[in-house]
Image (cartoon, rainbow, N blue to C red; front, top):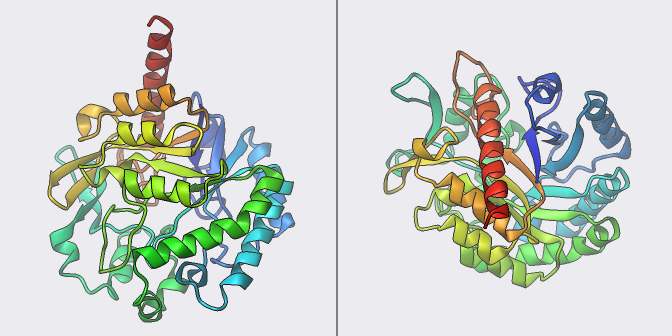
Length: 358
């Protein structure tokens, strides 16, 4: 297991590489070229510059999150092959730089959705939250402005304004795309990029949908055990795998995450996001501190299932609370994620040492 932290890059992130390096146990970062638009080629020079910045700080790049996929690929439009070719060029350039894990998602229009980016908890901490009753009252064409109004002035990953200015066009693009068609387009994409992945050993890790159900009538296909296993069978290649996000899968209380981990196996889990959340009712949840007692997920059992499955890839703490007066991108402050890292490393050590005495 390699403990990492997400870093959005200079000029985008309130957290510095120096901050990250001082967190005990962190070996690398999960990063991206945050200013690149879906479909653009990442040049060798840009990748080399990013790698040098990270390595000069004493850290390494453990993976990329994300190389975003153009909507033409997701919708299967006539232009998709040109954008797949661009994606392959980016993978080639990443592979030549020695970067061999890419997290991505195949969500339609919105990468993730919340009804509140700063819900106050009784102790004064702020968390991101989702309430389906609130979402049902929102015009989907207005939600991007509502989200950005709560962003603390930071660009939100997956909510890039250049793309979301065209929401009406995007909804029209997906109007005839159901789950089976979206699955077929995902299969087409993965089969097209696998030769480049094989050449450089690049592991493709798909992120589950967040939340794990349809929002605004849009198709969602990475929602639980059955759909994740369907993906792995569609393109049955060891480099086609999963970014197991406990928070995204955990939005649906019917998802038994330890069971999902055991079903997929550590060899096809290429990357892990660990976080907790608290269920308040059907379709109503809020994000929590990482420890089990603060939310609805058993983090010890999740870590144990990962260890028992043989998982040995990068882990990062996912969305944290906003605490201690910090100003940051919602969910991506320093303090609570650092607390999460310490907790996760403690769980891993306990599981690892316990296994030696069994």
